[in-house]
Length: 79
Image (cartoon, rainbow, N blue to C red; front, side, top):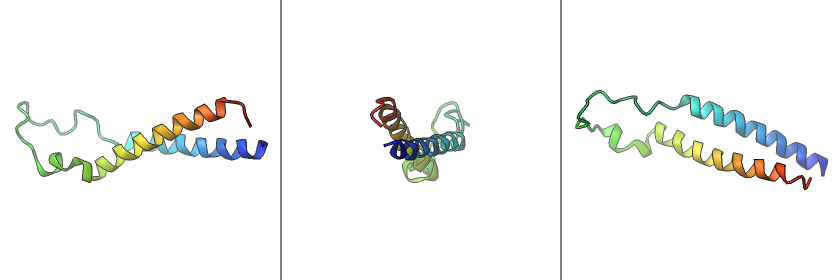
């Protein structure tokens, strides 16, 4: 069981590193607010879910859920 805990811990560390990199790669919420009125809706603004930024947001959500689940599993002291 000690080997399984070691493997899960290594996987947890890799998720932590990947999550940190993904958060740092994302743009801030205030980026792209060139006009005060907000009427300048562009193609990239409408299709943000299909862009690279949308992919980064989805990956961040998935990795954050994995982070919480693995943290809870490691805290159970079953292994």
